[in-house]
Image (cartoon, rainbow, N blue to C red; front, side, top):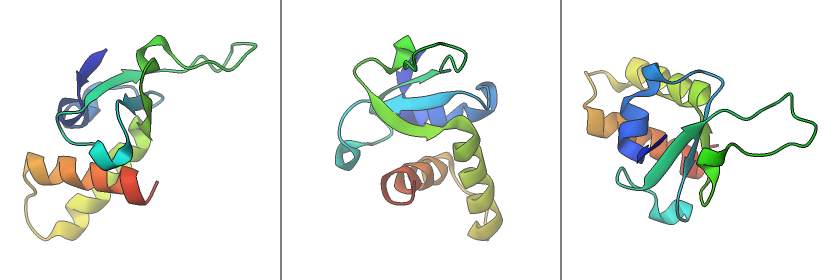
Length: 98
């Protein structure tokens, strides 16, 4: 399913933990407006292939990892994080820590 990256992050609770987020462009270009998609790889396939949603995009993060990042950010923020802060935190993690 194609969505802006910010929407994909905002909707993490809707995605299966086994899914992966893919995003268009170079990491230095990633923003909440970047074209993204969420898909599940077929781990049962004889040949490892990316899901069709990943076409033209690069790996961003597994949904389960993004959820863990947000849980950690919420715990350490010391305040109720805004959606924009949450999205920026996940993008930062994917760029620099993943």
